[in-house]
Image (tube, rainbow, N blue to C red; front, side, top):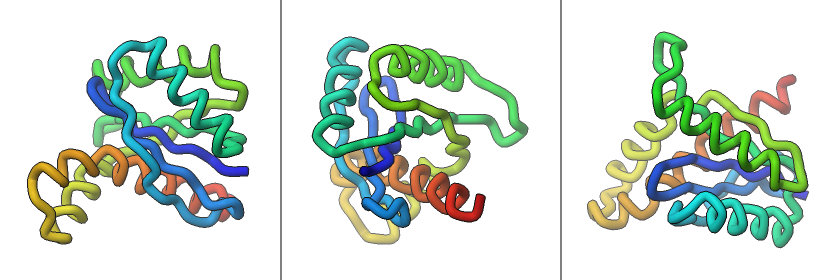
Length: 138
């Protein structure tokens, strides 16, 4: 049993998975967001293959707590995923995870191309780790 974290983007969706004890998050994959139907099918397959019991979708809330157009897109995506996913789907505040991911990859001295490929997955990992930590303290 695992929890899946998703960092939604118009072009790519970063995927992270928890370990079976729900203690740590690891980057897992990047899904290309070609069409809503293909994307949801790919996520549903990952849910089944990995024994996922819950999906957490990162919600990009502005620093002042307001919702942007991007926030609305992610909510719409999460609602569509809820209709097809065989497990609960929740949103989780992902403020600053993309910037944290970029910073970590820069510090690792990765090339620009490699950073671009890994950024979404690392952002999903950071967001999911925040959720797991909160859940454990809960």
